[in-house]
Length: 114
Image (cartoon, rainbow, N blue to C red; front, side, top):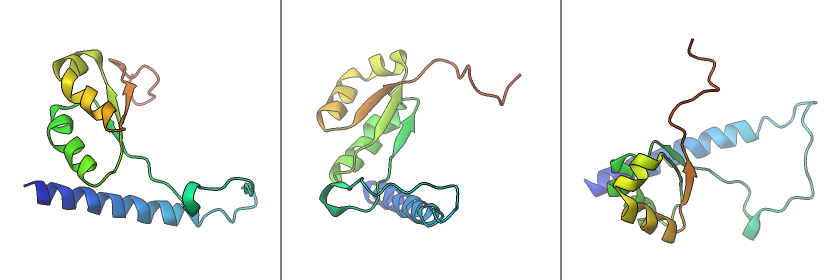
């Protein structure tokens, strides 16, 4: 199962990279200001940001170990309740270089709901 999940994550990363590359090629617009003073670390040309919402148990049990196996880092947005239920797993994630952010209990700024 780990190999299947790992392949799915790698496939997702490839899709995200493809989307990012397509979007990056759209910088020829007259309204776009190009920055020439920024240099990516180690000669890299782009980055992908992986974020995960809600602090699900599957993220601690499956996602983080797979990301760690491939040395890929993610940002996980947690509510306090979810964090407390798996505190040791989230502490391990931080120790392995993942970022933890605060997830609110509601989405008060969304325009999708009455």
